[in-house]
Image (cartoon, rainbow, N blue to C red; front, side):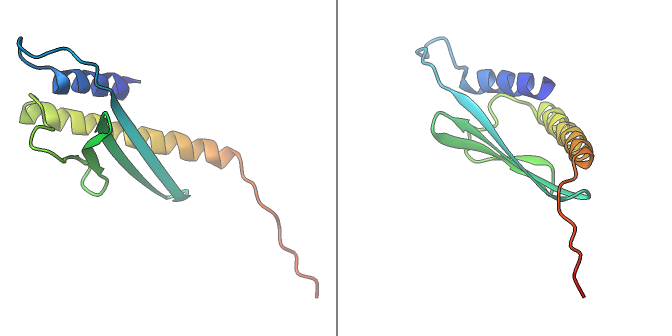
Length: 116
């Protein structure tokens, strides 16, 4: 899953520091919440966490990363951030397509036949 690899790379760059920095293990987690109301509507929410502190969010309307702290962008250039946001948008489009296609194969429900 390419987006996961890129997110892990981002996490390494975000927690990377100078030579004098002490080494400590900091867990970077990404949470994705996807809502599907029907076959034509989907919304995705995402957040990035360093340990127990949220560092990033996802603006689903604009398809952009939200930096919640001044240091959240890390050492990424503006061009690299544009590429990363594009990667996430492509991922969400593909995820939506695959999920809706799979859900379309499994239609559950019951028929309602009123008795007159």
